[in-house]
Length: 450
Ligand code: SAM
Image (tube, rainbow, N blue to C red):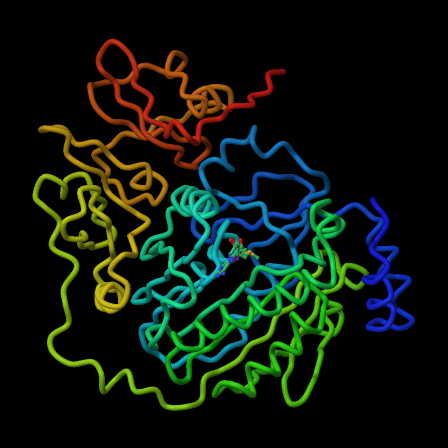
């Protein structure tokens, strides 16, 4: 590891006092590997995994497997996620919510690790907006959401300035930051560090959180997190948010033996995860609640615009009857939303018509139905489609977009390719052979053959 910047060392010594040496020592240790199982499809595919205390679907792995060689990873059965960041799961469990449908927003969502945790907490009538302004990162977010197949989830690309009035009930601002907590995991975090980076991040975080506040309903929660240790990005910002906006600090209590540090400053609380006190990287998290009355209710008038319609006849037979759905109007990919979540989805789209539904059913090409990848990963396809269970080798062939080793189909048409219960995507049996419909841009490129 490159030497730590002197200014960072001095500041951490001041912040941590006699604990500082343990902290610096922890930074010389290898980072831990951890995964979070998909809350609906995850089945632990690893031996020697131990549970992460603050997330019931999170596991530490003993070593770091080559995830790209595991079909379950491609099928979204689990997500490789840093252990400390999963503390969001526990925080959400501690919050009290009124029993009503909600709109959730992940304001800085890519690559989507925490979006997956928010999705785990979504109620049947709730919708989730995963927002990401940076285009290249949004593509990765989209890929991860599609592979996970989270229903009732939308993707958008709005800058903080676009949020002017309240529409959301829970907002996560997992802000871009100086990345101090990632120093032992990512060389870039160490190489890029400077005090001026900390200050510019702090400024950017204020602007983003301003947008989040404007978007938040009364009694709504704003969860703020960074992977830094600096007061400018963490507690000073939280105190500033509380003073500037109508927000109150919400306290969270963690079991003492987890090693999470509570920070209190000027009536605000925040929680810091340090690598010398627990198995994970650096992370800061705080919860704020909007207290002042907003006036969005008085602004709402007239009939609610309807963005969804009944599933067209030709599509009904292709959809599972387990979940009743509507489709987005004028969407040739037929974005799906479950019936219970339609009111909140309409409300969200009235506010942000550019947002698009992550789970789509597919489209008509002439008279033929072409299923969307998400129809497989979300398990929203009907029982009329046969599922073919592949071996690990043929599953990897399929993920490479090879079609020559798949077992023959029984009849012409679409099949879902699966590996040990994880749905990987679609292939079409022509009678003579297979057409592999795994998305070209996500295909496995670095196959390692034993
Ligand atoms: N929440 C993500 C997760 O758990 O996978 C990680 C988010 S990362 C810490 C911060 C994100 O903020 C990045 O994807 C970055 O592209 C985005 N970002 C950068 N500038 C931004 C801005 N001005 N407004 C909103 N988001 C921004």
